Image 1 (cartoon, rainbow, N blue to C red):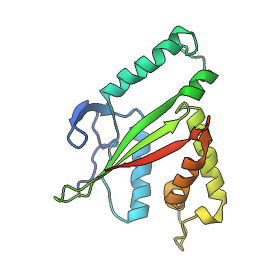
Image 2: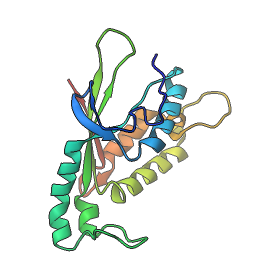
Image 3: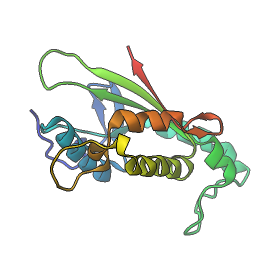
Image 4: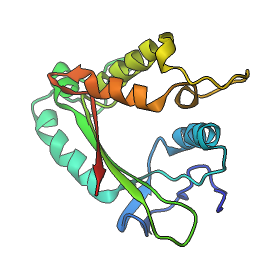
Length: 185
């Protein structure tokens, strides 16, 4: 098992990712997310894991073209004041798409891929609704994993992930699922 020697697992420089076959950079939240994901995966599968999180350069281009009309209409200030979030149009129309790939550390070449689509501005509408759904799940006994021992767990290791996933797919943002997972065959 390759153990990550750098916090993001990606490195600090842009590079071509051999699994996704794209040119990308480390995701700006990777320094925070990677530690939590590794800890969660360790609790869930009882094994060390390698994890990396990057953003394709094409995603910056897509974000620019999506944002341009909102900037032009004055709905999205280039330099918002502290505490000033995006306007209601941005919160409503925003969203994201991610591709997640998991592969074992062996020579089988097998892997699993998911396309994940989130509705609502990722920084405000999506995040607040996700936190609320996970908080409700924390309060429901049916969502809890039972390890039979004490300790400090991450949310992802303390909850039944299928229950959380179902809640997030059933929750709505403007009539659309808050989060949608699709396995890529």
